[in-house]
Image 1 (cartoon, rainbow, N blue to C red):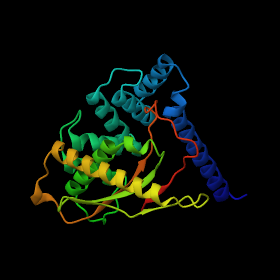
Image 2 (image 1 turned 30 degrees about the horizontal axis):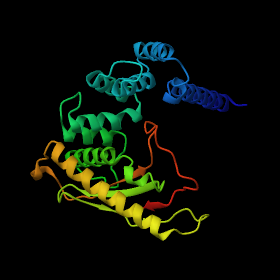
Image 3 (image 1 turned 45 degrees about the horizontal axis):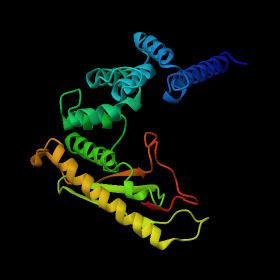
Image 4 (image 1 turned 30 degrees about the vertical axis):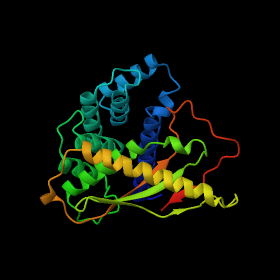
Length: 258
């Protein structure tokens, strides 16, 4: 083996080891992994990582502070941790920090700064590369807030419907649109009345959520909003916190909108 080939092999192996270590490190601080520990063990492990400025630990700690999991909820500290994680190279921390920035939750409200964070990790929500930070930041804040507000509509529980919908938003016009609903589970017979009912329930829930979000968000500067359309796929399913929810016998996914 030539000297050049040997150097290339060493570099490749070194890179593989580094990538493997980074993956193992990410797994170590993954919330699913931490969930298997006691609160005391999880906090100790994450705090040690935060002290070492580990970006994955900083992100995990930010999520714990944001949700109040095993620690007191602290939105200001969560924003600080997310910021440190982003600066340390953890791209997963950028979206939650962008949302907090758009909302002014634990950090100064700033749509342009929120958009800049999203661009930093390549998120444009389907808009062109030239979209400005301010419009992107407002659109993301609106879409995420609307998704949170919709949650899992209680009227879907009796029929057990779940799926996803594509929601598009044009900030400059203040308008939104749901993609057409379609049946996607081909292994089951078509149930027209069920999908029609799901469409009505979800459409109503989105309309009510949009009105609530428009009333709650910081009003954007219309002069700074450019013409652009943004989109986001929203899951429509019961959350883990919906402990009383139970699927009716034979219930299955019945709709999507994309």
